[in-house]
Picture 1 (cartoon, one colour):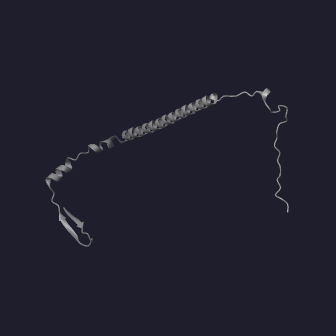
Picture 2 (cartoon, one colour):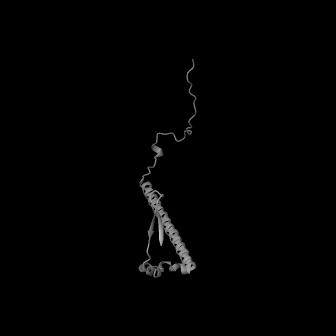
Picture 3 (tube, rainbow, N blue to C red):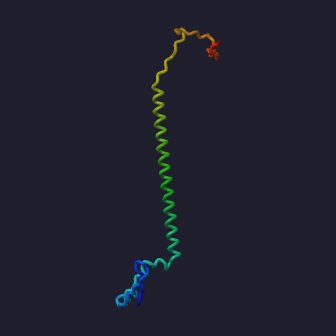
Length: 124
């Protein structure tokens, strides 16, 4: 068999003669096609692969839902703890009762309502 191999500058070509060896022909006859056996049942392989991908998607969705539920539970616990803390702080506040009898304020006085006054800038 004669093979022509281009040179680096593509102007000259060299010819190589490859003699057929018996060892090469033996290798060609005994090639291992076991890695291509899946192609024999390609439709079944495709179905199995699609099923595997669907299961992966379902697992991913379940994990995301589980994480979301955990976050919601943690947020609810945090809000509950915060509310309990605020309730404890409010309950610890002491409310003092006003003794009206000893007050110097007039309980019969009218309610104070501030009035809007216009302040002049000065006249010239």
